[in-house]
Image 1 (tube, rainbow, N blue to C red):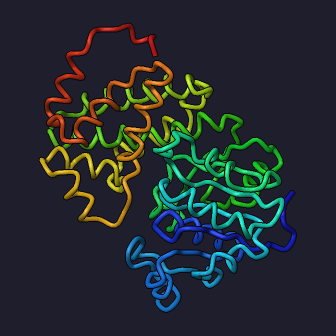
Image 2: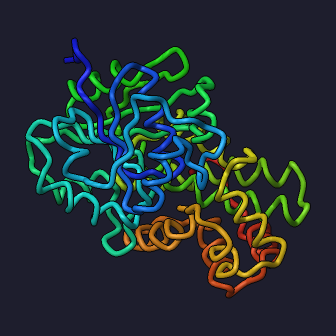
Length: 338
């Protein structure tokens, strides 16, 4: 189930999250190939051992080897961690499908929904790789900067293969990184995706000065909204009360390191979405997830009021204060109608 001599892991994506996971895996004594598509960034990582763009305060351990060849990164790798933005997952998986070895465990560390197909990330991966590969989802409250600094973090891993989940749970653990197993991949992925939308709303609340009461309402009703969608998609209510649901939601809606919350703050301050996106190289997954979630909700007949209001704000159809007012003036309902 586990390595006696640790075989390499490949981490695909040298943004903040991919770099943090590479640093973490190296801390367990496992050699890591950190792949990136940007040759300039890979060269700088190799020379300076610092990801100055995404994690400037973290030095790469000796066991982390940056590289631009995806074939070399995959050679002999037991674990392949995908940590690219959600809109790039299919393209990357198509590239690795040619080289990936049978019985490899692929770990999706991506929180999002594919816009064109409305598939979860594990479903996208499953469509593109051979059936003998196991797919495991890793999600939960985990800011990249804190994981890279070895601050205590607890996450969830889920997948169809209990052996693969158990192996990841064992081999990825450290004194600062604890993993809980789940059999509800749908709930884990939906919770991880929808929390980004709610974090945008939380940022808007902060920018408008609406107070802690309003923030608490966004988190609580955001959880109810995420739970409704997850259950309609086949997930379990209990999963959304765990790390990949409530845990990640609270972190992303309140933490200063949250990219989606920051984007919501800037929207609430009156900045246009296009200007916000031009000014940063980091990805706020909630922007793409918002419309995808609405499309799924329409297909399944699920009401998503917060998500719908954020879609209008993101598209410039509505001012942030108008969205907040309309949420408050919606028809009254029983709180048990989650």
